[in-house]
Every structure is written in structure tokens, then in C-alpha cells.
Amino acid sequence: MKNIIYCCFIATAFFFTSCNKEDVTQSSNQTELSDELTAYSQRTCNTEGHQHSLIKDDAYKASYEKRVEKTNKLIQTRSVVDCTEPIVLPIAVHFQGLSNPDATCLKALAQIQIDILNADYQAQNADASLFNAVASNYPGVTPSDACIKFCLADQGHPAGSGIADGEPAVTINATTGDQSSTWSGYINIFVQANTGLLGYSPLGGSGNGDGVVIDATAFGSGAGCSGVVPQAPYNLGRTLTHELGHYLLLDHNWGNGGCNSDDDVSDTPNQTEPNYGCPNANSSSCGSIDLHMSYMDYTNDACMYMFSNGQAARMNNYVTANFQNMIDNIGNVCSGSDDGEEEEEEEEDTDNDGVDDEEDNCPTVANPNQEDSDNDGIGDACDNTNNNDSDNDGVDNQEDNCPTVANPNQEDSDNDGIGDVCDEEEEEEEEEEEEEEEGCYNITLSLTFDDYPEETTWKIKDLSTGQTVVSGGGYTVDDIGTTIDEEICLEDGCYKLIVKDSYGDGMCCDYGYGSFSVLDEVGDLFYESDGNFGKKEKVKFCIDLSEAKVAGLDVEKDEKSANLVAKTGRTSKN
Image 1 (cartoon, rainbow, N blue to C red):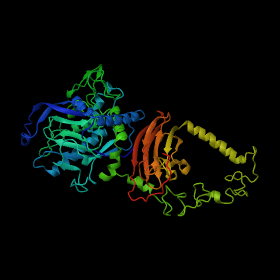
Image 2: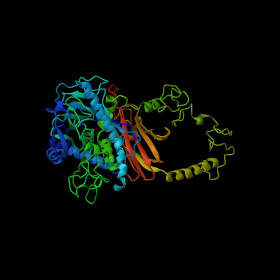
Image 3: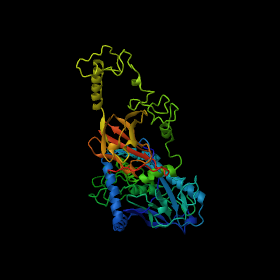
Image 4: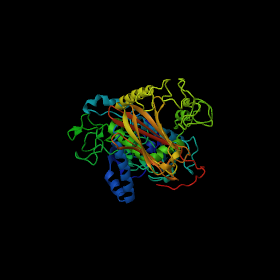
């Protein structure tokens, strides 16, 4: 899929999920913190209270419901994560209320926590193998990769943060509470002491400066730092794994409680209430064995070690549908997040004529002026049809009824103006095309044009070969404000759709309101772009013929340049 980096900053959202700490005890082996930090032996969450207060804000409620609606539409076509490249999100960590903080130690601890998240969210944690011993209790369930990667941002920090490029996005005593608009475009993690909660998060974050709150006794792993020391049984970094699940729209396994409640994930067994500590392997309720090793239960860190496939897919779909702001920001805030190999390929100039191969009408022979005498999209330097007798049969191309195959006698049995040798080829090609179509999947690329349709081109490349399999363009001023549907049939495999604007101002919104979308074989929306990009927007996806569906989705797009010269206005039709 996509190589997307998500830097996470977590704050308030529509539904807040908070994990209370009960049965308070002191940790005897951490005397330096005995007056500062409190250790807790049991998780509980007070989702309903946070939820009730947030729903009162009508604007927030409407925004939340819109995010969930977008996610549910995507889930209909992407019920399984087929991961080739993870989505990357940027994270910022904010330590609050510390006395005599050790900045070097805290930065290292933040990275330790990010490493734990990446292992857990990509099913690379060593303890995931524990599921093998109990897998028979859960038919069809397996520890699954959410295809999400988190990056501790290290460049392009917000103005006024005082953090230099090359340094991690870690602030100390610079924020309060669970929201920082300065850090919009990140997933924020607010680390606080003695919160009375292990942590809490919105149920479906917005990326607008909100984030997750984590108690200083449950952040990271290892020895910790002065004022921030992970304490058993929540000392393996799993509290943030759990809370980030909420931020990405995962509910607890038991939903609102009781066997008739649901967490909106199809492959997690119904569960009446939380499990605590490290439950017996056969712990059950609602007539089935509870998935108590899920990160979304209340067990100890050492006894939770997986997301199910349904949970992984729900999170990935939520990110894909709602976190375009973070996805767009990743190259600016996380070094090494750009796909350099792909960019090098796209900027290649094979014939060294100063025209990029993607734009060159003859990329193998130098033709800087792009001459194309017959306007067929193939430069003269590559176009054999500009020769007088392409097939060397003694008949000039202009007179030849089949200029690509030698036929000196110009036989044309059905008098259709096409020589018999070309008719035969055409029939064979049609038969081959019919055979090919039986083994392909139909999608529709729907293009709605702004006031400059001629700037729009598109192509679909096979990711396994790098070759373009289909492309389009040549739109004219007659197409202003219209919608054109391009029907495309693709074989099994993974592809990249590239929609380009030659001027660099996208399809929206300076000169009309253009956009594009992709529909699957039955006409359901698979991806919708608002057309607001610069030179190009890229959509990676896969065709699964065995399931007759489109799977996976990764999106990248560039920003418009601020230095574009204004164009002549046209009468807009949209």
C-alpha cells in the first residue's frame, strides 16, 4: 500500500475515552518518586461521562459524525488491510508539570514509546506469537498489521516552538491540558503526572491539535526519567497503544457493555464487560471466549498483545478517510519520509532533451520541441506513421488501406476501407481484448473539470513493473464544468493512479471547482478527491480478482506553489 508516516498528537474529540486508575498502591522500588507519582493496579474507563459532555457541543458532534460517516463508507470496500507500505503519521510528545526535567532522557523515552507503538500497530511485537497457543479459540482471528507507522517529528516544527530542525518534537512544560492548536496536523501525546487516569482520548480524533493524555506512570518502558517512570503492571507502553486505538475510532471490546452491545468490529467476539489483570485463557462471556488479549481490553500491559484484522482495518480506514492533513504534512515534519526512489523515477529524462519522461511524447529520442505533425500524441521522432511507406510495400501511407502491414495489392474483401490483413489483426485483437476483459476488474475514473480541462492528464501504472497500463488526457475547453467517466479494466495486482495538472494549480479551486473520484465495479465510491492539489495527486490501490473487489488505499499529493502567475479568467460552469 502506501508509505505514509503519521506523527501523532492526541487531544480532545467528540467521544473521550478515559482510563481510571483504581486500587492505589505505592511502588517501593522507586523512592525518588514516592511523593510525586502514584501507581495503579487496575484499569477502568469513564467513556460515558466524557462522551456526554462532548455531545453537548453541536458543532463538534456534527464534525465527529461526518468523520464516522466517511469511515463507514470506506469500510464497505476495505474490510481487510492488504499492506505493502504503511501510512506514516507524525507524533509530538508534550511533557507537562515536571520539576528539574532531564531533556535528553525524556527525548529518548519518547522514542522508546514510539518504537513500541510501531511494533504493536504493525504486529511486529514479539509477544504476538503468544496467540498461537490460543488461536483455536478464535476461528478467523489473527494478530493483524494496521499498516500504520508513527514518526516522532524531527523538522519543520511550529513557529515559536523553539525546537531546531533535527531535534525531536518533544516539549517540556510548554503546554497544558489536552489541546494545543499550535500543534495542529500532528497526533499529540500529553504526558501528565497524577491524572487519576491511566489515560484518555477522543473516540475518533480530528488532528486539529487534539491528542491523547497519558499518565506519567504509564508512558514508555524501562527505567524512565525523573518525574516520568513507567510502573508495573502498566510499564510496557501499552496504555498509549490502547488510547491511540480510541483516537483511531476503536471502542472497547464490550462497547457500552452487555452482550447486546457492540464495538462495531465484526471479528471481535461479543463481550459483556472488561477483563482485568491477566485472565485465564478461556475467560468467556456472551457464549464465546473473550478476546482479552486485544489492546482494547483492560488487561495488564504484559497480557495484551494484538489488534484483530477488523480492528486494524477500522483504524486504517479512519486514518485514510480523515487524516489527509497529517498525511499532507508528513514530508515537512518527518525527515526520510519522502519516497525518493519514486520521485527519481518520475523526474527521469531518458533522452536528455529537457522534457520529463512523463511529459515527453517521445521519451527515447531527443525532441526538445515536441514536434507532432499528425497530432496523435506521439512525437515525430518516435512516430513511424510520418514516413511515406511505413510497411515498405510500395504504397504511400496516405493511400495504404493497411499502412502497418505490407499488402501491396490492397485487398479489401468487405470494401470497408480497411485492408484484409488489418481486418484480420483487428479481429484477433478484439478476441484477445474480450479474453483479457474476462480476467479483469472494472473501475470508473470520474473526472469533473475546472475551467482549464486541457491541463488535466492521468495514467495508471502497474506497481510491480512500473509500466503505464492506461492513460488519458486531451481534454478541451468544451469540457469545462463537465464530468467525464473513464471506464478502465485492470488485472489482478496493485496500481498507482496519477492525476496531473500541467500548470501546477490542481483541479480546484482557483479557476472553477474540479475534482475526481474512483468507483468500483458495482458503482460504489472507492476514493474521492477534492481536486485541491498542486501538480499531481497519487492514489495507490490493489485489485483482488479472487474477491472481486478493490482493496487498499494510499494517497499522496503535493501542494500548490505560492508563486504561480495568475491565469486569464474563463467563464466557469461549476
